[in-house]
Amino acid sequence: MTADSTSHKSGAAEAPVLVHSAQSRHIDLQQVNHVLVIMLRHHGDVLLTSPVFSTLKNHYPHLQIDALVYADTSPMLKGHPAISQLHLIDRRWKKQGGIRQLKGEWQLLRQLRQRHFDLTLHLTPHWRGAWLNRLLRPRYALVPDFQKDKRNGALWRGSFTDFYPYQAGAERHTVDKNLEAVRYLGIEPGAADSRLLLCPGAEAQASALAHLQRHHVDTPYILVHPTSRWLFKCWEEQALAETLDHLASQGWPLVLTAAPDPQELAMVERILARLHIARPVNLAGQLNLQELAALIAGARAYLGVDSVPMHIAAAMQTPSVALFGPSQACEWGPWQAPGKVISSRDFPRPVGEVVTNSKYRHSLINIPSSAVIKALEDILA
Image (cartoon, rainbow, N blue to C red):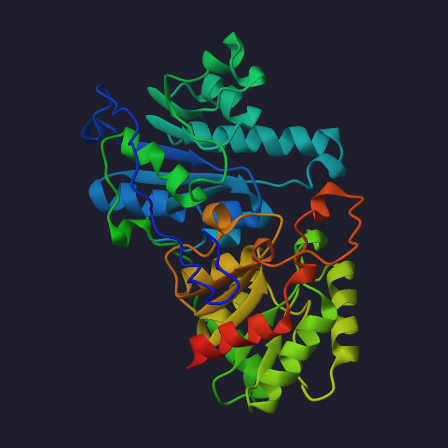
């Protein structure tokens, strides 16, 4: 789903009409007690699995549902009311030496075995899910039927009991793809089941409020997160500076955030240097993910690119303007959330543009500040 260059349609992704997965005829969830959902990817991917937990718990309240994620992504699911336990893989184990890694892996395996899982849902092609099933021996082990060469061999397929159809590509939203697992189990998610859920927690909310008070922000503000760990997803710094100056001229307080990554912090400094009117509160590199979520929840509007803060804004139901280019909003856009999507694919490419890196083929360089300002004015009206 993308916006046209004049009206900039809403980017709130709606679940399309689907041909549902063939329903499992032998998995009776009334006879299942402990479930493990495995999602070993980035922060945004983990947050986009939150409706899977909600749906299972809402329809089968007796289930004890655990999650296995990377430790650094755990804030995306921490406090989720449907999750009984979070099991964590620390990616730093490898850097701490072989003995530390073996110890960490052994402790994790013991922890998982103690839960006696009846059912595992492995949502990615990560090999860890396959060998964990062989070690944990759940009664049922589900995985999408990825139909990839390296996921069709006997070792992979022998690690699972059930394969549900998987549709690759950008035609469907990632949340909807994740929910195919529960559809296979005979559950049709409702609107409440399908929403993203993120719980910042009282401590993060108090910290966010303290940041605002320290900078004397006591009126509705706009939170702007211009960066991404993938710099090819970022908007032009000059265009963003023009947008911030316009918002400031209209009297809007601005809060600027970014991850503590040196490249992202350097980008923020360059944006600040281009400003003529705006004097945003600069909290770049100063927030953890729960504090960022709390600040986004309290914002009147959010402006950013395709990155985890955009998904956080969707989870908090904060109206947002999301800028897209290399990725497509129909697959990765704000899920069931108020706001607008603006895609670089809806504007002419710059005359004489030479692209030497395919990642920049749909860069955001051609999105004019006027289009973003108009979209913001619409959601702020």
